[in-house]
Length: 406
Image (cartoon, rainbow, N blue to C red; front, top):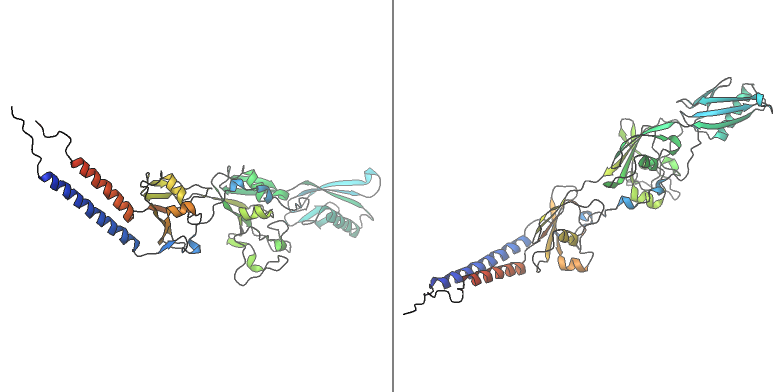
């Protein structure tokens, strides 16, 4: 009996050679693409050369802020104002029967119509000053010679305030006039929501110029406290004196419809502790609601995808790579961060080294919503992938031991 060996076709070797040649061609083409990307036109930066205006802003967590610092530094809750109900006690002698008790409401013009005495302007006065004013009116009307007058606050006018935006219970709330400030409005709306930002806008009805202005923040001169304001910053050429006097360029901004707007940075306001921003009757408090654009992580990562950008957390390049399951190749090092140029629709590319980002926090670029993080191919990664392809094809093309024996 004759054993015949099957002859391996000669073309098998040529197939392997062709595969190796094809792999080398793929490698060369990929290397050319990589070098082409590096030299492409457009704005390219590194973390050292990127302009300041392109740096991502730090994201503060408002949930960690001490909102108690927004409380009014001085609360003149006893000051008489329009709409308040006061009780006036006038005594002409030691006998209780000689004492007259009168409940009086201060009208919208700030006048109290007191029986037998007539109209007396009381709005804007403390109780002690109001008592002296009523005594003078009594003497002037020749009703009493030396009356004893006591003024007591019975019921303050309630301010109707609308709270909107990133609060847990948006809606219309009634706040006592003496405690109608930013902190009270936020507390009435059950506090800040999880997606709250750091910017708050207060819109108050513009008061008539009557010689008495309502302060925006307690303790502020000219009725304006510039601490924590993003709107009330000095314009070019304006000045702030040593005693914090402000000029006309720092007054509240008119937004039409009889309203004035103040914008407040909660981080600055709570750090300085000079809060107390007043919300007038008919005022609106709008808390910024953060809805950040998603982050895209693509390229040589295990799970390329679109990821939700955290609302109140800082995200850096290494964090984005971790979200995507890490790099798919250990040799991957070059990262492109594609970011929109502020104030336009163009994009710029910031190149980051992954190895350097792991060692240097400055190189570990802070990301912002809408960024695209792309882990790029390099000649080293292309050669590594091509070598694996060639090795697989060559091993797949070799005959198994004993193959071809009949």
